[in-house]
Length: 318
Image 1 (cartoon, rainbow, N blue to C red):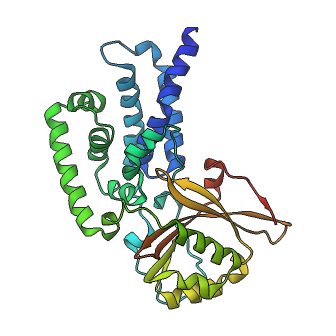
Image 2: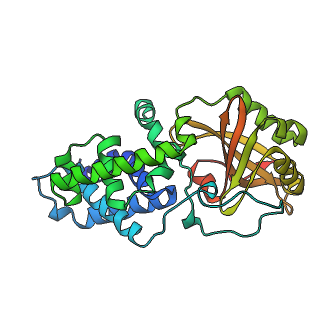
Image 3: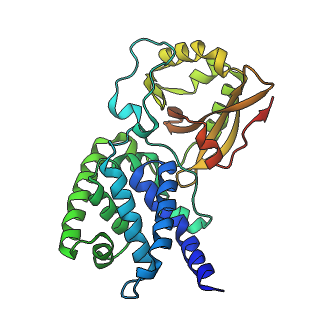
């Protein structure tokens, strides 16, 4: 293998976990992909500067960390609608949208290694990704490298250009912040619960048949639906029924394809009828959280760009 091919192979071997690191840092799989691509370009351009005093992996992560930190300097904290806004007071079709850069977005599984997915899946849960965004960027990087990737303080210090003492101080502050946020988050306490797969199947069946009585009956009394990029979200069975009735024209005739997201969690890709063409087109990725054998929160991420990243078809026949 020539030197160029060897360089490419070294980077390809790191790419899944590097993407996973950048996603945790940035909260968007598109931004993570961009960061990994930019890291590759910098690695390629700076190959002649790589010295063997540090490992290749540490050197690459130093570049990737700097890419992420640069991006975060100019970025506002990513959120979900339920994190900042109150539920809708009147049920109307959502119109107002915020930019994609405002939101946490789901991610496909970036590693083919089942052990890797199993070990780290709790730190890929959307709730955990949301909590990470509450940390200052450098603390976020320290916490991810230490508590997720299990690096030593010395490795982290070398990667982030900090002293080991500064790493340990940042780690302590990050853990304190995360602990406070976890205690405030009811969702975090349920994070490791296995989803009710029979309930998920009934959700898909009721939605595809657009049987509103059956669909709403599956929801918890405090059940909710959020729909980034719309800040509007809906809570309570009565308002959910009104909302589904209002959007019947758009959603009736939908079909779902099963996918997994954020560490193997079951999710569903929704395709809706195209008004101009005789096929179904991408609409949203549904991640359904359950509680007490009921649907508690449907996070419907309305972003057609996600479909290609999840390896989904561009359209379905009716």
